[in-house]
Length: 49
Image 1 (cartoon, rainbow, N blue to C red):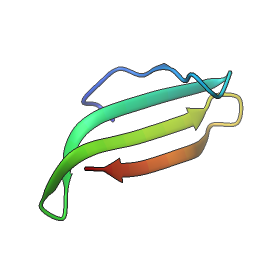
Image 2: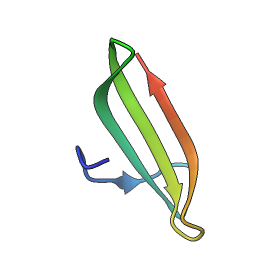
Image 3: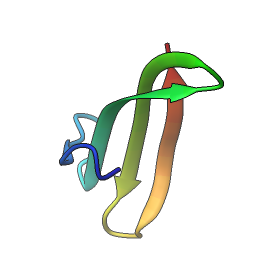
């Protein structure tokens, strides 16, 4: 997610969150990504339009 800097996630205490504008299958929307820094695991990855 090079398009934006991460912010602290409001739910996961050790989480980093990215929300960036993008396109998926021709639809414009927002990519959402949350990682758990303690385990280096993706806990949320979604596209919403």
